[in-house]
Amino acid sequence: MSLADSSLAAVPPDTQVAAGAGYVVEAVNVNVRIWNMNVSPPTVTDFDLISFFGLFFSDVVSDPRVRFDPVQQRWYISCVSIEETLANPPQGEFWLAVSPGSDPTQMFALYAVTTINSFPDFPHLGFNEDKLVLTGNSYSLPLSSAQFLGTDHRAGRVAILHLRRRSLYAVHGRGTGRKLGSPGEYSSDLVAARRPRRWERG
Image (cartoon, rainbow, N blue to C red; front, side, top):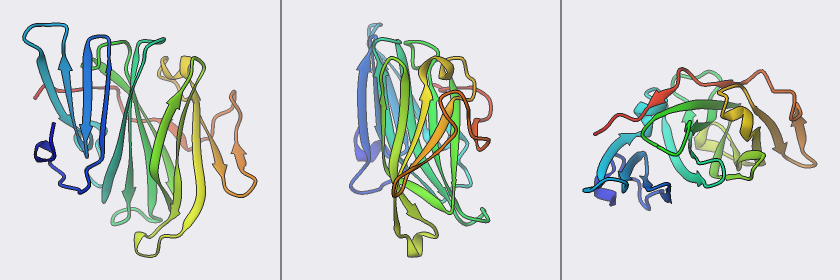
């Protein structure tokens, strides 16, 4: 994909690519393309993160992250959003999609984490056999007067994420840090997002 393939012409573009299980998944800004290299010729599936996560009322959608877990044979796709115009108070959100298996064209489980009066920027997604972590630099809202607040981390058990249950807990890395919940206790604002969704072939 190139910048010309993206419906959002942000420059420099946010780009990501990952490969696994015979698939290549690339994101450019809010657009994602999947190549299925297991068939000849390879098939291509296109979609956009705004439609997939249902972010039609968000002012900003950015920073896609794409990862393939070779141990669990799962795909993880994330992004962040900001809602100011229609949200009172303004809010940011982490978004996470978890595949049921190694085929990224199948149904994903969706998760969302809302951050009131702040938003995550420059996010990262990491995991091991037990945990998945979303992290980002936390900035205050509104955007017109944004100030750096610290770091924001969201962690979840991989096994529970695969079961499509609530599984993220919050660790706000501001100052000494403040943990909301524990690996067995989940904050009430961290919820499975809407219904599972399937990428629609373009």
